[in-house]
Amino acid sequence: MKLRNRLAWIAAKFIVSAGISLVTSSSVFADEATWEKYSYEPYPIPYFVDDVDRYPSTTPTEGSVNRHGEIEYIGEGVFATHWFTEIDGAAWHYVTAGDPSNDVVLFLHGYPDTWYAYSHVMAKLSDDYYVVAPDSLGYGQSDKRVEVDVSYASSASGVSKLMDIIGADRFYLISHDRGSVISDHLIADADMATRIDAFLRMQQSFDQPHGYPRPPHHLMATAEFHAAENMIRNVYESDYASVELSESELARLEWEWGFAGTPEASARTFQGTSFDIELEFRMANSIPNMTMPVLILQGVHDPGQHPEEYSRSADVIENGRVVFVEANHFIHTEAPETVAHLARNLFQKKNADRTEKISWEPVEFAHPPLP
Image (tube, rainbow, N blue to C red; front, side):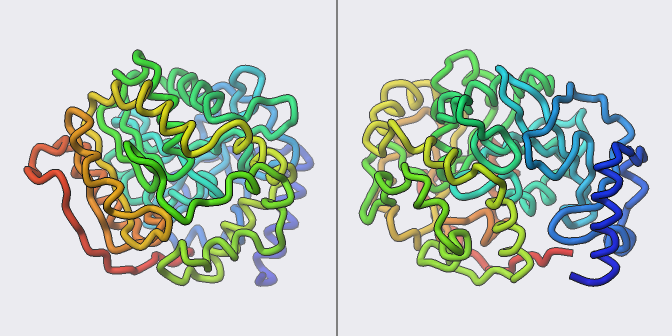
């Protein structure tokens, strides 16, 4: 870490510990060069939006670093805001960017991610949409306490109420991996399903059993699995990734995973469920409610999810498409440009411009650097 950034870090910690708020408009820092002067890795010096009271606040989860209304630069001239709110007795951390008067896009992250895994896609969509990305219960800076229900059903219930807090009567939905399981529970609520105008679903089984090799859920239900040394780097440098991420990106992903209690809470999310249980639930409760346009986006190089598993998926819903891309499991991290492009097309045209139900789209990997 550079000396200037180290000094900024010390100053930032003093400011937060002293309870001092530097209230300013997010427009003060309007370009990368200016923000670089005030930023440090892996998280920003605490400046706050001038409408910090836009959403009801709560005490951040113990060990959290960001604060309610804190600004973070996420690239491409875009500044996101961190928020904390209480839902059903649990503290939720979520991040927003863009104009709140625009249509809302909700992002639900997978494993072992947080909101940050979507940051590059969020930056690319925030010019036209109000993008919202929470940390699911048990992850990042959302609640991880033992007494909090961190199941996928509980996270879905919390997300539903978060949309009410934000005032999003209708919204678009993007999910990945375990976030798609949360989406299944969200859509199983028929009233909530009618509020979703379009759904982009990534890297999760749909109407067929999960292929082999399967992630070891019996091991993932233990805290020891998630507490393994270099866990994040091992995941992102495994056969589940197609590109080599920058050191700064890996460091940030690792930092996001490093909040106290994450291994234990993450283990609890895998307890009491399985791929087969989730498939049965989805077929009976979620897929019948998928009347909105749905785009199933899959990377063809994921070692456990194979194209043939999705050969009939578009036929089991009213308005469905399957798109395969030359990517691996972490499409949104590997190819954010492609995800943003397909999302924008889905939201604007509702699959109407594509007559084929299954298509392939190549990806030119060009991971955007962090500032």
